Image (tube, rainbow, N blue to C red; front, side, top):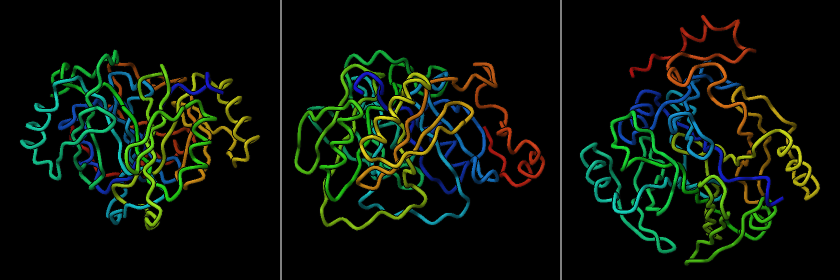
Length: 310
């Protein structure tokens, strides 16, 4: 199965306010909003996607902003940090930018030899910038962050677990390999791929269970090129004992979901058809897109959703 998954596809998290979420990711971090749509299961709630110019898999952070949702509580069984790749030598500029933007809880550290800047998002979510040499992915050049300092896409995610053995076996099945351990963190990485190639497992045996809320990662999605590769991956997961959903049409990709042994919700998503299936590249993220099954509710949905100022 090593040639099926190419890295991360997207990371989806929860938020409390769509406006502050939009402002942070487009103005502070300089990503492009590539899709403004709604939650398939709760169509009166936005689903906002941020990434590079076209929403390339491996660059896209997505959010469900539920108004007045309580803050999440970090713990075992969830992704506790999402990291983005930036060019070497840019963290000083980023530290200054984040300070000027009023972003709090910033700290610098090093992990597996790479310099990092860790900070909090608008709902307290842990985010990091990691200096990565040779990342060929092009940052979004149309926002407020200079392209030479911009986010190339994901570097990876960190999941907090009480025990990592079974999840490590699952990641190996999915094409990752263990590359090292530093303290409580064991790294699994993928050679080549789409650049979003790292999953770190932080093992905290006595950690309380995570509680989902604003600032929590809802699920992490892994990328496959197409539905044929997804079907092969699903068959391998089922054979390994995972309880996997049938493929679900999410308009911009097909998705399967399963709960990893440590409790984190995993998704395998196709690269096709992409975010330009219902908008031109120039128009991405501008109009409210409604899934076909909710099209008859458009007027009600538009009345319920708070406006987002761009």
